[in-house]
Length: 167
Image (tube, rainbow, N blue to C red; front, side, top):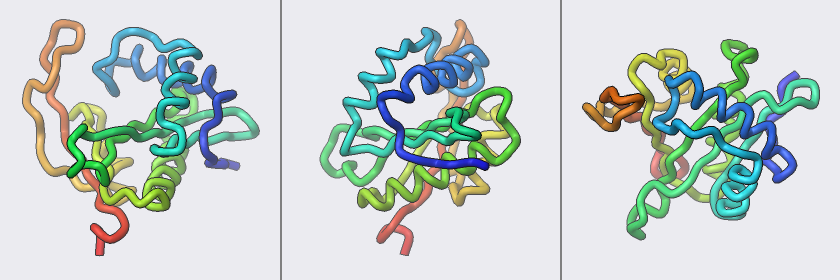
């Protein structure tokens, strides 16, 4: 059984492990340096109370996480947050990502945010399908948005309206 709940500092090692798999796979992020437990603790502390962070457990083990943070610094963008979802390699394709993303959507709405956005590598079909299944729409493509391992990568932009923006 999958259980989604707010992330705690004690989840930092599991979150780092899952995030580092995403970094290693080179299909989910431009990041190339592994994260430490301390890095994740700092991230959770910096975002606590303002931005949602969710973990999904299966049989008491953290198998996925999703979090959101600032989209842009200008005040007009305060109701918009950018998010990420990462699933343990051995748990992919089993509904874990959907559980994490749906819980993040619910938490973001509960905090009064009006839009979730993200960028996905075009070849990451599983993430694109997950986002479509959770009500996101693809709004465009950033061409040559960044370099990863020396190669230019495009990003598909996704968004989901929340709360009053979705009425």
